[in-house]
Amino acid sequence: MSMSLHQKNKTVVNTIPIFKSWVPEWMIKAILFILLLPSIVLFFIPITNIPAAAGYYGSEPADMQFSVALFYAGYVGFYSLERRFFNYLAAREYFILFTFLLMLTTWVCYYTHEVYIFFPIRFVQGLLFASTVNLALSLMFTRLKNERAREISFSVFFGLLICALPFNNLVTANLIDSFNFNIIYKGALYSYLPSLILLPLTMNRIRLNVRFPLYKLDWQSFSLYSIGLVLIGYIFIFGQEYYWLTDKRIRYSCMGLLFLSILFILRQRAMKHPYIDLRIFRSRSFKAGLMILFVMYICRFVSGITNTYFTAILGFDPIHVSYINLFNLGGLILGTIISCWMVIQKRNIRFIWSIGFIFLLIFHIILFFHTDAQADEFNYFIPLFIQGFGVGLIMVPTIIYSISSVATSRSTSAAAVSLAIRYLGFCSSIALINYFELYGKSQHYNTFQDHLTVLDSPVKAHLQHQSNMLIENGLHAELSSKAAHKLLINSLHKQDQLRFAMDYYELIAWIIVGILLLIALSPYLSKTIIRLRSKNLSPA
Image (cartoon, rainbow, N blue to C red; front, top):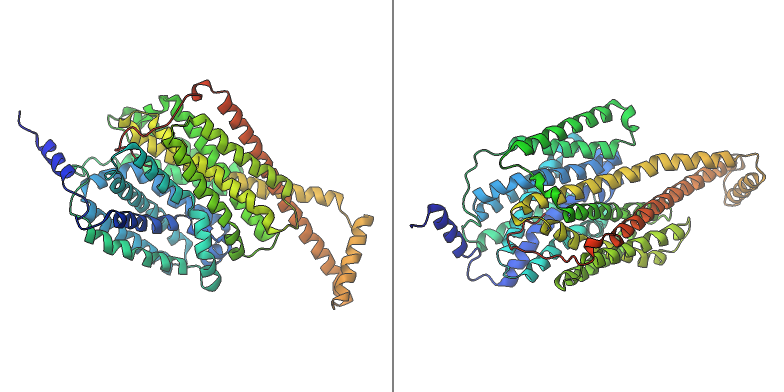
């Protein structure tokens, strides 16, 4: 029987080398790294220094958090649809197209001051980031011949992703301190130029897959899915600020999300080729992996509270905080390396999860007992390293475990849902922090007010002592009393911040204890190992 046209095309694609013969292996790896790095840096730029970003755009801190959620929503929503474009265009053409568009959106971010122009651009950047990830990892995976190499590649990519926030803080702290906030986008714009020059010169004009025409694009599912993700981000980030369902914006958003969710599920069940194959939820291991991934992402962003504590209570400047977070960055890198080694050595998933969450539990216990109004920075070096190490241990094995627990034909849907759960974990962590910060702080402040009045002898003595100190330092006697009262209020606000942080550390510690018990009491995890079964496995 003669070979079909489809088979002929597939044979051609698989036999032509992707990169030109004169390009050494080390250069290929460097080019792929240069391709990924600028987009990963773009991911968390608005929250590297929230006060500076919010001041530049004349907006609230929550708006900057929402801009990251929009980027994330674009990445998650477009992930499944992007593969159609990836299969349609040749790799080199595709790379030039989305890199040019990324540079264009970065240029717009550099010049705009309006947050309502900034928001849609951030969503578009998320769409383009999905293209960057798929192309870079597909180029990487086509060169890997064994399972060990694929596991290492997953570890490298996700290691870069979880290191993005502390790395961004380190790189941008000095720039923001010396220039306007938008200088970061100018740097990101120029950072795309090396890969834009190198990849077209080193790549052959071939396709990684057989060309698949762009007809019957499921843009309806993409729209339902993406709008729902944006609504999740809006509800979780602004919910506490607007007092949840008492505000019509949050109420209508919840109603819209419910309607879109029902419509999306019904559509996927009715379609022959669904956008997200819901049969992946039949796997018990997949659902367990999603739960662990969700909790890990909530634990990961506790670092935001720690950084706020450093700046608001201890008075460290952003540059100083970025240097302290080098210990967290070192923990993330070491944890990712060791988790990769454990996966290669076929350690069971229960052992890896248990060790990772024990380290996270230790971090939260230490921070609960060592959070104080006055402290030395070196007291937090080891806890920050421990937190990064725990996150690094859990992240990569959990994603590989979740994706590999379903049939290979459904791995794309598994990767997309794993990505959505990480987005949900990011938004949930912001919602929890906002709740404890806005509601918890006010509750503690009212409690302090009930027990502290100017009629109390200790309070009167404290105010008199502060007033005398101010007079001795040259302040006029008539102003010293008002200044002493203001200093007392500032002290109360610091105590509110401390109590809110301690409450949050305690909550997460109890959640981790519950997860450790579930892991220990799940018998089917005792002999479960994780492995990548196919070199065509979809990366998330």
